[in-house]
Every structure is written in C-alpha cells, then in structure tokens.
Amino acid sequence: MSFPWAEQYTPVNPLMKWVDDRLPLPRFVYNAVGAGYAVPRNLNYWWNFGVLSGFALVLQLVTGIILAMHYGANAGVAFDSVEHIMRDVNGGWLLRYAHANGASFFFIVVYIHIFRGLFFGSYKAPREMVWLLGLVIFLLMMATAFMGYVLPWGQMSFWGAKVITGLFGAIPVVGEPIQTWLLGGFAPGNAALNRFFSLHYLLPFVIAAVVILHIWALHIPGSSNPTGVDVKGPQDTVPFHPYYTAKDGFGLGVFLIIYALVLFFGPNMLGHPDNYIPANPMSTPAHIVPEWYFWPFYAILRAFTFDFFFVPAKLLGVLAMFASILLLFVLPWLDTSPVRSGRYRPLFRKFFYLLLVDVAILGYCGGAPAAEPYVMISQIAAAYYFAHFLIILPIVSKIERPLPLPNSITEAVLGHEPAAVAAE
Amino acid sequence: MATVETSETAVSAAEGEGVRRRDFINVAAVAFAGVGAVAVLPTLINQMNPSADVLAAATTEVDLSAIKPGQAIKAVFRSQPLFVRQLTPKEIAEADARPVASLRDPQSLEERTQPGKKQWLVTMGVCTHLGCVPLGAGEGEVRGEFGGYFCPCHGSSYDTAARIIKGPAPKNLEVPEYKFTSDTAILVG
Ligand code: HEM
Ligand code: FES
Image (cartoon, rainbow over all chains, first blue to last red):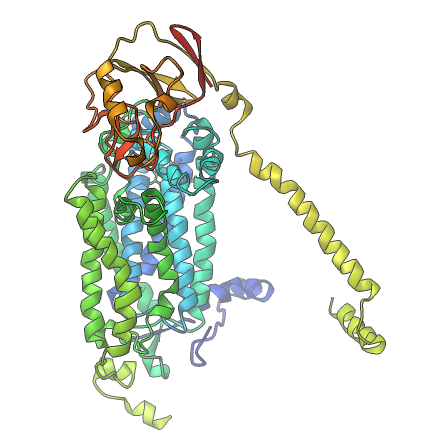
C-alpha cells in the first residue's frame, strides 16, 4: 500500500539497484517496514506489541531449531534428552529456558496485542481481514505451544496431551476413533510424541507465513491509531523508519529487560514442577493444569458440569471452549458502532475493562483446582464472557452516544489543524 | 494462456454456446487430477492410526489369585491402566441398591460383570471425562463419596460398580472385553 505522499524507493547503492531491478525485494522491504510505509504520527506504546510478537516468533524459531539439534523425539529418551540439554549441552540450560519462557512471553505480548485491538476497535472496517488473520495466528500458536509442551515428556506433558486429545473424544460417535487417530495409539505414546514434534517444528513456519499475510492485509488500509480517525493527509503520518523503528526499538529494549529478569532469576516461575517428573501413564498428577496462557479457556471448558437437554456436559464444555475463540471471528460484525477507538466510547470503555477483569477471573479459576467455589465462579465468568460479545457489545453499539471525535489525527496531536491542510 | 483464452473466446463466439471438445478435455483433466488427489488421501490419513506393533500389544493377562475382597490392582491394557477389583459383599449390595434408572449411564452391576462372577469388577482406569486415571485402585487412595473411584482432575465420582454418579464424566468406567481363562485368571482384549 501506499499513500501517494509516501517516500519512493530510490536505491543509492548500485548493488541494491542491480538487485532491485531484477528482484524488487529491497523495494518490498522498504515499503513494508522502511521509510516507504507512512504511519499515523500518533501511535502510542500499545502499538509496539505487533513488532514484539514478531520478535518473539523469531526468538522461538532460533532457540527451537537449536534445541531440536539436541533433543530426541522418542518416548524412551525424550525426557532424558531434555535433562541432557539442561546439564550437558554447552549453554543448553539457557537455550531451553529461553525457549520455554519465550513461549510465555510470546503469549503475553500477543494477548496485549489482541486487547489493544479490542480497545481501539482495530478489528473494524477496513481492517477485518487483519483481525481474522490475527486470530488464525493465535489458533496456530495455541496448537504449537500445546505440542511443544508435550515434547519434554514429563507428567504434565503426558497428561496435558491426554486431556486435550480427550476433548475430541467428546464428539459423538466419531470422537473416539478421532482421538486414537490423533494419538496413533490408545494413549499418548511414541507415535504421538513423534508426530507432535514434526508438527511443532512445522507450525511456526506456517505462522510466519500467516504473519506475512497479516501485515500485507494491514498495509492495504495502513495502521489505525489511538483516535481511530482516518489518515487525511501527509501531515497525519510519519515514515515508519526512523520514527517507529526507534519507538519499537525502545519497546524491544524494555521487553528484553523483563524477559531477561525472568530468564535468569525465575526461569521456572511460569512452569509447573510436575513436568520435571518423567511421564507415567499409570498415575495422574493430583492437579492437571495447562500452561498459564490456556487457563481462561480451560476454565470455560470445566465450567460445564451439567447436561443440557440431550447434550452431555463434556461436549458442552468442549464446544464452549472452541466457541469462545471462534466468537472473535465474527466480532467485526457484532460491534456496529462506527466509532473505532474506545477513547471516544464512554460506555464501551467501561464494559471493556469489565471484560478484562472477567478474563483475569477466568484465568485464575482455570489455574485453580476443579472444586468450589472456582467452578461456580468460572460458570458466572464464562457466561459473562459470552454475554459481553453477544449481548452487551451489540446493544452498546446501538445506544451509546460517543464523544466528539477530533477532526483529524493532527488536530488530536497539536490541538489545531495546521495551515498546510488549508493550503491543499 | 492469454492467447489461448482469446482464441477460445473467439472460437466460442463464432460457434455459439454449447459443450465443446475443449470443455470436455478440461473437465476430464481436472477430474483425473481430482481423483488422483483423493486416491492418495486414505494413505495420508491412515498412517496416523495405531501401527501394527501398537495393535499387537493389545491383549493382557491378569492373575486374580492375589486380589483379596475389597482390594484392587492396576494392570496395563493397551498402554492404559486397567482396574481389577474384587468387591466385598457389602460393596455388591451397595451397587445393587442403587436404582438403575436413576443413573446417568444406566447399567446394573450384572451387566458390568461376567455371569456368576459378580465380585470381579474389571474396568479401564480411564476417566470417561477427559481420560485421567481415577484414584481408588491403589493402596490407600481415596475412593470418593460413593466408595468406588474418584477422579481428581475435575472431580468425577464413581460408585462401587464404577458407575458415574457425580461430576462431569458422561459414562461409567468402560468395561473392556475379557474372558476368564481359569477361575483365577482373565484375558483382556
Ligand atoms: C510459535 C513458536 C513456538 C512456540 C510457541 C513454542 C513453544 C514451546 C513450548 C511451550 C515448549 C515446552 C518447553 C518446556 O516446557 O520445556 C517447547 C519445546 C520445544 N520446542 Fe518449541 N515453540 C515454538 C517454536 C519452535 C521451533 C521453530 C522449533 C524448532 C524445531 C521448536 C523446537 C522445540 C523443541 C525441540 C522443544 C523440546 C525441548 C524443551 O522442552 O525445551 N519450537 N516449545
Ligand atoms: S478427567 Fe476425570 S473428571 Fe475430568
């Protein structure tokens, strides 16, 4: 994409010119993340998290490919090979902690990125496709992280695999054959471990491909901004480089500091100690929990403890869990307010914060044992989650009276329209 | 391509509408490629199913002689836990006293055991909710509110006939196919 006023690529280096004439890759990069991409001048730090997600993906790819050089994807040796990485491989402990915590940080930045979109209405026209592709990435990430967690073949790995593939067993009639088919056996074993490794290696590259589509789709209309007001002219934008490369670079520095703190001072803080016990198909850990980033969904899964008409509780939980994510695919059509940014939507904003609290409660309950009062709290919180999107948002969009929008991005930044606009 | 298309449109414009030889070749070629693609699918899908060695290890023999009334053991069947339990007369009476119609998955103790061997309860040790191993077969493990098995994962409680009474599990613990090879031994699978 480009606004007509975006800078054009003119190679200075003769080699670059030679390449660009034959394969316009330098031009492509320049227009995608260089000075050729015109970006609203008022982006705040919430807009850093896209680049941070991209960084986290690269981090996982690099550390993962190195881990794969030392890891043995066989149920007989997997656990020991991870211990071998931890104890014997030079710097192996660091690489493994970098990868395991990298997954957590990947989810942290992606969740912030998603909630940024929810607050500032980034999912609305003309950026629906950006949002939909983002959700595809999110689903792929969840699959990748789940399969990655199985690889160390500890107790949580094994039982996580069993419980999650057990979800498919809830489907009537074909469920059990599907589960056996997914696992290549009657319980997780060597066959399952091998295929999970194969896919865990593959999916991040699929994610990288979808990320490219995501950014491509974004660059058609260009980035939104905290006011949600469309770009009207050159005075509203600045080139991506050097303005946002610098701003993103600063954000990356902060990210790396926090990441390093966890990596060096609490590398097992986000993990579960039971995963340092080798997988044992004969004994279930007292309390099976997935990784923290799945807790809200796990809480929704467990919220269904009663049958509804002829649908068994187990199937309901599974359906609700998948629905909680699939629901986000229709969000652009549920929120019909023409105003994008939550800044100018006083009522929407209150419900947005309530949703944040609700998801935090779900997350807490998902990590807690399956006992009262957590089950009841999850039930209420899960009901509210669905109500937010299916009932509250459509109604709020209809009845809300938004605050007056600024006339332009520049006016929002400077408090007045510069003379340049009048001159045009 | 472009030239072919132009000449095609030119031809069809000249000949008018209707099925032409070229349409037939088109459909035939695409159909041929389609059938080819579908033909390889079963192999691609079926390779994921349990392999021959996994299926070969699909029967298990269990010696019952050491299991006293009230005791249970865990064996391995198809790499999953198998619970073999000798019920006490009291446990049998408890199971029989429960009205079958009131159950989530209605089955009597008779239907879940072999004729004349009502005290031998053989079930999978796999919770029918999401597949955890319920507690209650091991020495000193809790057996839950109903004296059978208790699944710690999401709190399903089974009675002394391993039937689901409370919690999210939809079904009773599965009774695998098995037969008595002697009075004190069974062959499962
Ligand atoms: C989307 C990006 C990725 C995510 C979210 C992810 C996530 C994970 C997680 C959660 C684990 C378990 C960590 C543990 O508890 O030890 C793991 C392990 C592993 N991953 Fe990844 N991963 C990603 C990319 C990759 C890539 C590209 C490779 C390259 C093949 C890879 C190779 C491995 C290996 C070999 C292990 C097992 C060693 C270990 O447990 O530390 N990962 N991954
Ligand atoms: S797996 Fe047993 S209650 Fe969920």
